[in-house]
Image (tube, rainbow, N blue to C red):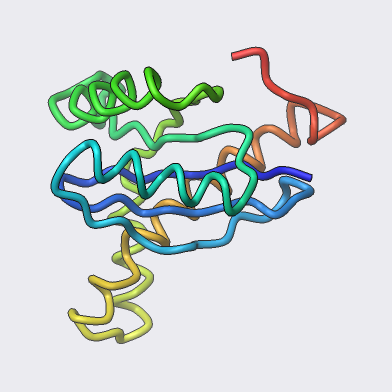
Length: 149
């Protein structure tokens, strides 16, 4: 079977989550620290091969007004470059405030700053992917069906 990958782009780090094979549950996998697009491509390719990824869901950090601001523009630029090397469906998913929500949960759990830094990105990716998976099940009686995007 195959999985869906969820990504939460930051400036120097990308959180990664993977769905289960039934595409119902998102699990945080880790974060990729990258200094170049080439390095990012290599790391993503390894993960995609290991998890048999068929689709990639990318968190799009729209502004609170729902517009494409500088952060979202940077994410789309990275994705457009990656699309030239990774021939899979790429889906942008609204992720407004996902990282802040994860940070709030970690603070409520009384997690130290150092520990929060280590898990924040992958939990944000998990939240983005889980939101996508949940919405896909609501809109489709067959959750394994591929989107036409």
